[in-house]
Structures are given as structure tokens and as C-alpha cells.
Amino acid sequence: MSVFVKICGLTREEDIQNAAEAGADYVGFVLTEKSRRYVSMARLEVLSHFVPKQVSKVGVFVDAPLEYIAESVYRGELNVIQLHGNENAEFAKRVQSLFPHCEIWKAVHLNSREVISQLIEFPVKKLIADSKIGGSGKVCDWSLVREISEKKDIILAGGITPENAIKALVQTRACGLDISTGVEISPGIKSKEKMLNLFKRIKNFRYEQ
Image (cartoon, rainbow, N blue to C red; front, side, top):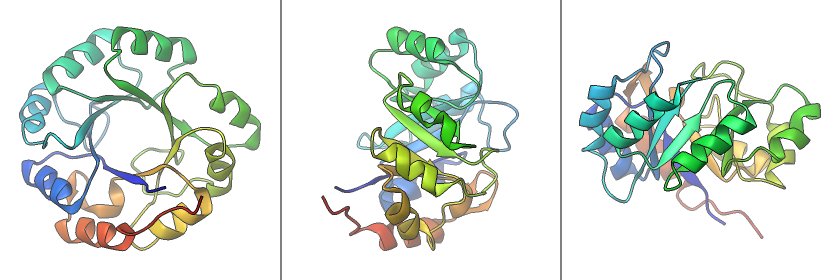
């Protein structure tokens, strides 16, 4: 089984093109004003046109109202809605019912083993294991990710770099990687060299069945 990669926090046209050419399966746009990688609705609409058809577009929302999510999905032609705040299961179900053509992902902060059973039952297509503060570049507890990966698709985020990507995958068996800080020059500004290095390292990685 191969893994996929999402490059998140994109703010520039050239970074989208470089990410796609390097091999990204998903590109992510952060749609919360508190983030240093925030893009406005108007900017999202512009950037969306630079995403090749074979690459899926992810909108990252933090406790956003449904109206804002709906406008973003429409104007950004999003394929995935990533809930990255305190959204509960009922909200996730409602989002899925309103946007059946989108995959719904939920970012979770793995603080203890006690939450694992609850997270496995969360009504979304995929979970994202992030560190306590999204976009901080800090690593989450990989042992907890491994436990969840045995029962539900989970994407690994938080502190992933070209140098530790393979180790992270081996230890967690995550279905994908969500990388932002690890391929940046500064917040929202990606390094073409780092992205190429990342995909060169993981190009032939496969999980043994």
C-alpha cells in the first residue's frame, strides 16, 4: 500500500505548481484568519485555478460557520473539508450531509490513549493527527497514531520533514502525510527544493501487507 501527501498552508501560485510537479496528491488552503498561512476568500478563488485537475483541494476550517464553509467550497471548488477546531461529531455529520461531494476530514490532538476509541468512531472519512498547536512544526505522539491506524484511516501531521518522513510512516502506518512547516522557508512560503527532496525520499515507499 502506498501513501499520499498533502502540502498545506499554500499562499502562492508558484508553490502550488511546484507542489503538484513534485508529486503532491492534495494541496491545502488555511481559511482561518488567526493563521499565519491564512488566505482570504478572494485569494482562495484565485489560487484554486492554479491547482491541476489531478490534485485535490483541501480547505482547512477552524470552528467556521456553515455559511463560510459553503462559500469556500463553492468559490474554491474544494474536494475536501478539513475541520481543524473543536467541531463535534454532530457538526461533522451535518457538514457531510450538506456537501456530499466532499470528503470530510477531522484534525485531532492526541493527548492520551483514552480518546482513541472515541476518535475511531468519529463520523469522518479520515482523521489527521496533529500536534497540540497546528502549524507549529511539533511532532505528535506517533505511538497513538499507530494504534488508530489499525482501525481507521489517519493522516500524520505535525513536525514532518523530508528527513523524518520515512521514519514517521514506518512507526505510525499512517495512510498519508500532511506537511506544512517541514517544507517551508517561512510561514506560507514553500521551498521547491524541500518539496522535491521529500518526494524523492518517499517515492518508492510502500507498506508491506
